[in-house]
Length: 534
Image (cartoon, rainbow, N blue to C red):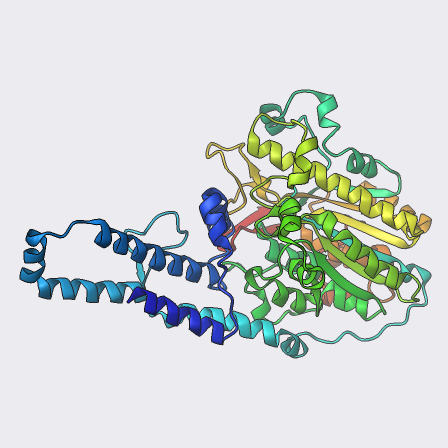
C-alpha cells in the first residue's frame, strides 16, 4: 500500500518535471549530522517543499521496509493466528488509519525528531508549494518586465564612469576573520596563541586592506543574517522583508537595483557563484535584482559534465564545489568583455565558507592547525582558502592589465556566532547576537583618481554607523555617475536633495558622514528584527 502511495507521489512529480533530491540519501547514510545541518540550520526544507517531500518519502519507504522485515522474520504460530482472527476488524481499522496517516501527517520542521504534536494537512499542499516554486522559476524572466522599472539610458561622457566594477560577496565571513584578528576575546579563547600562526590565515587580504589605494571599513552591520535577504540589501539598498526565507521575489521593489542602474550606463552585468542556484528561489531573487541569467553549480555541471570523482575531490559542501573550479569560467567571461568598449559589472559569491565548515579533500594535505576545535579549525582553513582565492582572482586581473580600470568591492554577506556563546554553536540560524551581522567592506582600485576619492573617505570610517544598504550608494559615489550622487546624512534627514538617487537608495555613501541613524538587521531565517538606535 505504501509502495503504491510513494509511486503515485513520485510519478506526480516526474510528470511535472520536478526532481526529488534522492542524492541526499547518501548524505543521510554517511553523514547524518551534515544532513541535519542542511535541513535544520539552513531551513532548506521549508520554502520550495523538496526537502520535506524527500523526508516524507524516505520515512514512508523505510517505515514500510521495517514493517515488512518484522512480518517476515517474526514467527507466526497458531497463537498469533488466533489473535489475528479474533481482532481482524480492529487490525483492518489500524491499517486504514495508518494509510491516512501516511498521506496526511508530516513531522514538524526541523526534522530532528518526530513531533509530539504533528502537523496534519492535505497532501496536495506540499505538492502545491513545489509546483509554485517551479512556476516562479519558469516565469521569472517574463515577470521581470512586469515588476522591475526600466532605467533610462544615460550617456557616459565622464571616463570615470567606465570603471569596471567587481563585487565579491564572501559567504558567512565575519569582519574579524577577514582580515583575521587574533586579539579578539573569541580568538584568545579558541585560536592557537601564536601571532605567526595568525598571520597565516589571511596574509593577502591583510596586506590589501593596508594599501593606500584601499578603503577598508572594518565594522558594517549586515542588513540580514540570511544570505538572500542580505543580497537584496546590498544590491538594491533597501531592507528585505521580515518574513521567513526568500519571499522578496514575490513583491514589487520600489526602486531599481545596482545592476539595473549600471546597465542603464551601458554596463554588462553577470553574476557567478560556486554553489547551487536551486536553493530557496536563488534564481528568482537574482532575476528580480537584475541578473536574467546566473552562472552557478548547475551551469558548470551542464557545461562540463564532471566525473563523480572530480566532484568528490573538489567538494566544498552539500551545495556544490570549491570556488577555484569556477574561476576559469569567470575569467573567460572577463576576456570576452576585455576588448569591448562597454565596462562590466561582475559579481561573484564564494561558497567554500558555508556550513558544515570543512575544506575540499585536496586541501587536507596542507591544512594548518589554527584551532584545536575541529569545526573552528575547518572554518579558519576555509577563510585561508578564500584569502588565496581572492589573491588568484585579483592577480588574474593584473595579468590582463585591468586593475587600473577596475573597482574591487569585497565583503561578507553576514557573520555568524562561533562558539563564543554558551550554546557552543556555529550558525546564524535563529541568532540575534551582533556577531551574526558583523561584516567588513573593502573598496580597492589602482585607478589613481578614484584612489584619491577612497583616501578622502577614510576620515569617516571609524565614526560611521554603516549598514550593508550603504554599499550600493557608495559604489555610485565612487564611480561619480552623472546625476546619481548619493544622499548624505543631512539631505537624507531633511529630504532636501534633488538627486535621483534619493529615490533609488535607502543607504548612504560611506565616503561621507553617516550621521545618526536607525540600523536594522533581519535575523536568519527572517522572522526576527534587530534595531540599533545610533
